[in-house]
Amino acid sequence: MNTRIRTLLAAGALLAVATACGAEPLDSGAEAEPSAAPVVLDQAPAEDKAAAVINAITPDKALAAKVPARLRTDGLKVVSSLGYPPMELYASDGKTAIGLDPSLTRAIARKLGVKVTITDEEFNSQIPGVLTGRYDFVISSMTDNAERQGKLSFVDYVRAGAGLLVKKGNPAGISGPDDLCGKTVSVVDNGSSLALAEQYDADCEKAGEGGVTILKFPGDQEALLQVGGGRAQANITDYVVTTYKAADPKLGVEAIAIEGTESLWGIGMKPDDKELIDSVKGALDSLIRSGEYGKVLKAWNLEKLAVESATVNGGK
Image (cartoon, rainbow, N blue to C red; front, side):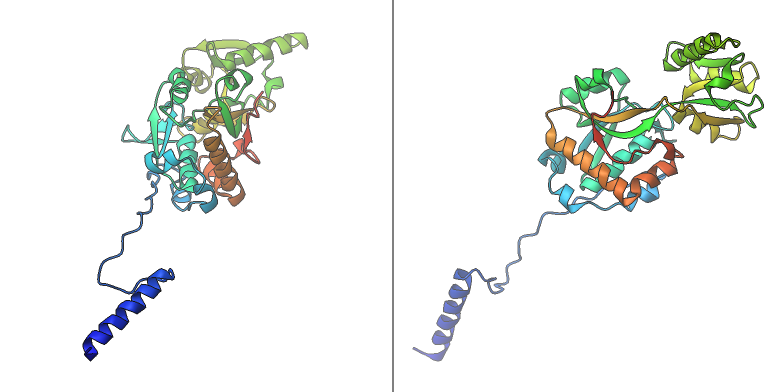
């Protein structure tokens, strides 16, 4: 046997031993199989006031490892109703979702290491869309209450209540409901704000003070105009709306929170979707601990809505 043949046989034997022992095979010139490409996480749009915070969020590896398998392939499918600023609204292109709810949705998706799509649906279609599996969750300023818990399970993400809008400088000296006796307020007809106005009117009458004169309108804008025009001393609406309006200097109003009216708003999911519920709760808690949650709320001037931890079905 010549030297060339002996050398080739020896090399072959060494390769066989190395492979059998589980060692890396010698380079044979063939290219290794490429590993799975990492998920390219969504960037928040420029008009999202929390874009800088959101785009800096990196996945929590432990949470990302436990997300439902469908989220890794299909992404997170979310439904909201984009007509309630500053919680949900369209960017100037008329297509892109922005607002606190889309901001927190993108933050949760990035923390879980998955992509996300946000679809606009009218409010009454949202719960059926989740129950049929068209969407993974709904986040749409939805109050977590006992009635809705009969259909969905909620991860509670903010605590929101009612507020007052008064003229800049507060010339009527209104600091809360007790100061409304003998004054005129404007509200949207047939809503929770009207119920509050009627309650305050009854309280004033019971206390022997002048009642509250209530002006009812079909929409927020008409009700707000009564304050600017001097016809009403205050407008009762949701606190999140008051902060949004007060941030516009052209409107000349300021916001006052009505203490004691707060309730939990939740992210709604199918009750049997336990993996997803745990994932969303874990992501929200992670964002709270890291301070990223607080920064997102601050970007939208809604720090007052913050919760200390994520709860499941904490509403009453």
